[in-house]
Image (cartoon, rainbow, N blue to C red):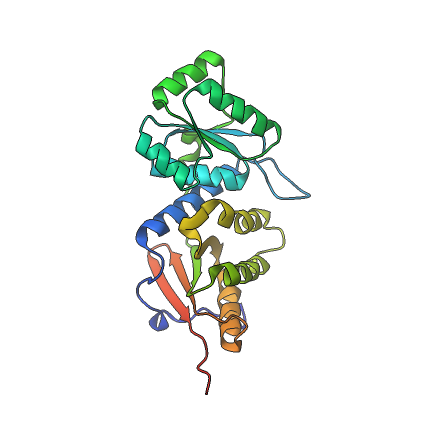
Length: 264
């Protein structure tokens, strides 16, 4: 785009400094699951696509499932998951991945029925093995709208797409919403899926991602976003250092925009 060129690779830092590898894997896993889930949403010509009223079964409560549950919350779906491991149950509850841990499928269904009726996202973990929960679901005729196997075939990003991450050096609650708004302004007018992600992902990603944002986009979005961050830090409108990570297939770069040096 004229006037919006990404810096040449030689000017970029070779490694990320604020976003750890485990956090990046979690965030990118949530984003992939969100893309797969939201593809099943009904068209919403007058608003955002939404999976409200749909039930996802996410099987075992492992790392992949945790990312999928968070993505389902962002997409608007309710989720049921299973685990007989008390440590995993507690960790998922503490991280805000699941809202309730219950001891029976009947108890889970009571919670889910109410939230599905209201078209609200909720995640319930049943403290049993997946095999036990699945057998009981078959006995009761419980058929989820979405299940893990349906979401495993998401094609990888095309060469035209990249993951765009941004973080700030301090006061994320103040500055990240301003950068999120800039990112939203850079999206195409009809990109309701992207805007839903930007609006709701911070809420459901929770404390682990309180100082970082992630979005999949192409260069037509990344270029004006980077230019806008540069302009806002150079002018002092954004009064903290901003780090941007660009992850394209086979390529990773980091940009850092520092505050201007002010004479005393």
